[in-house]
Amino acid sequence: MTYPVDMSVKPEISAHFDDATNTITYIVKDPNSDHCAIIDSVMDIDYAAGRITYDAADALIAEIQSRGLTLDWIIETHVHADHLSAAPYLQQKLGGKIGVGEKIMVVQETFGKVFNEGTEFQRDGSQFDALFKDGDTYMIGTMQAFAMYTPGHTPACMVHVVGNAAFAGDTLFMPDGGSARADFPGGDAGVLYDSIQKVLSLPDEMRLFMCHDYGPNGRAIEWETTVAEQKADNIHVGGGKSRDDFIKFRTERDAQLAMPRLIMPSLQVNMRAGEVPTDQDGNPMLKVPINAI
Ligand SMILES: [Fe+2]
Image (tube, rainbow, N blue to C red; front, top):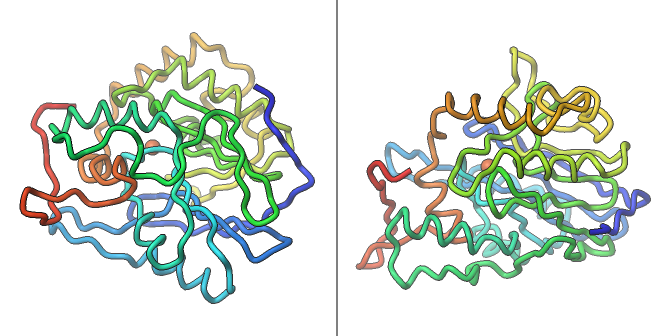
C-alpha cells in the first residue's frame, strides 16, 4: 500500500488531556479554512455511581464554537477499552460524521458475544457514518487525510494521517512509554509489531500524536513526538528491536497487566459508536459479564 503522504500540509492541532483516563483528544484544523476534525473524544463517567457527564466534551464544543469552526469529522482510532467516546453528543451539538475502521465489525462480533447482545445489536458497523479501509482518504476542509490500517492492539485500529501529523491511536506511546498492550480479544503482539513498522515507515519528520500518556518515571505528561524519535528511542521497538524480541517482551508484560478500570462500560458504549445501550424497557443500562474476558 502506498499512502498519499503530503508533508507540505500543516494542520493546526490543539490537544485536550483528560486526567481521569490519561487520554489526549485532538482538534485538527485546516490552516486554509475553518474546518476541523476531532480525534478520540472522551465522555466522563463515574462508573461506581453509573453517572455520565460531559465536561470534557463541553470543553471541545466551547473551543470549536469560540473559534467559529465547522466540524467535519469525529474520528475514533479504535474501540477504546479505557474511556468512553463522546461522539454522539458532539455530533448532536456540532454535526460532523463519525468514522472508524471497517474492522469494527470484527470487534462487534467478538464483544457482541461477550456481552450476550441480542439481534438488535447490529454487527455491521452501521452505528458509524463512515467505515475506513486501509488507505482510504477523506477531507477536512481543504486537507486530505487518510487512514492506515494498524491492527494488533485491537483488530480495528487505524492511524490517521493529516498532512505532516499522524495520530497514533494505541499503537505507540511516547518513546519512554513504548507500545500498547496486545492481549485484548483479537489483539496480537506480532501483528502490532508489523503495524508499528508501518507507522515508522512514514517520513522521519512526521509529527506523531499519542492517544495516551501516563508520565512514566514521574515526568510531566507529553503527547507529541516524531517518527525519527520513535525509531531511535522507543523503549519497545526503537533501535531496530526484532519482531521476536518484541513478541516475547509484549506477551510477558501483558500477562502482568490488570484490565483497564473502565473496560466494561467502554466496550459496550464504544462498539455502538458512543451510544449507551438500553435494557428491554429502553432505559440506559450497562452489563458486567462474569468471567467472560
Ligand atoms: Fe486502546
